[in-house]
Image 1 (cartoon, rainbow, N blue to C red):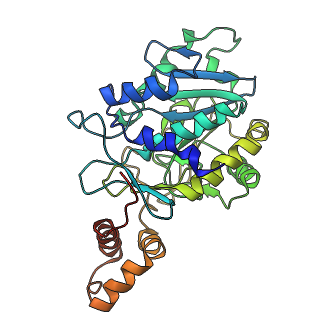
Image 2 (image 1 turned 45 degrees about the vertical axis):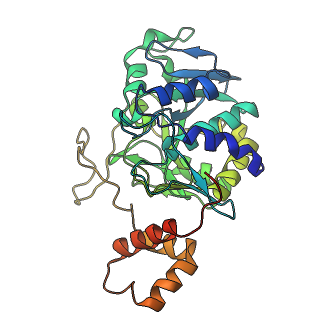
Length: 333
């Protein structure tokens, strides 16, 4: 893949996509509707290629506010390695504009599977929940619910560059065996990660054996410091296109009829216990390392001036990125 193909990602992220907003509708009309087969009564959009028992998942909305303007300005750095925002308070929307973009590239390459562009994920997974609650919305299955015809659901809605989620909100949603096998196929250093929170695939956990979420390279989602790692994104998308058909053939190991939860307190697995307050304890652990690696010249200037002293890691990482954004690092907008 080449960087010219990223222009459509820049355009996707130029729309603010609050649930049901003009910006979301404009993005869907321009980028998704021309390639899909079907729209359900809730507004979820579907594209089927082949018969592989795998669902590829993203969502069309973002955490922009209803009052935000329809469009926003995004920037890339001089090296064309990062997509980011300016000083305003709006997020970039790579969560989940990047997932939408990845799926559009896979559709273009005819990678087998069912592609679902979900609506209203940021409002609690309302689009995917609607699918769960409407088994009659599809025909041609002998199962109680048509989702049971699928072995895997892989969402493209995770920050970072190495996670294959095995748990969401403390509940196991994918087996370690499946996560390791997926990581082996991608061959990019991905590892099983039990620190997931929520995305649409979690709503399918009682119907589909392997429900995961894959790192797509954005960081600081839901904030105005959000950015997208473009180098990683191109590599990941190329690998998904190369091995996507093989991913659909992976064995499923988790039994969706059984519940398993993380043992945070040493109680062992307690079936039926859910954690409303589950958080991703790993989020932010690598913020400072990431900021130093990404903005070495800015960090050097701050160290020389003494500005970086007496701060904790999170404060320092935030200051480094904020300082870099105020410097002349934008290529265009």
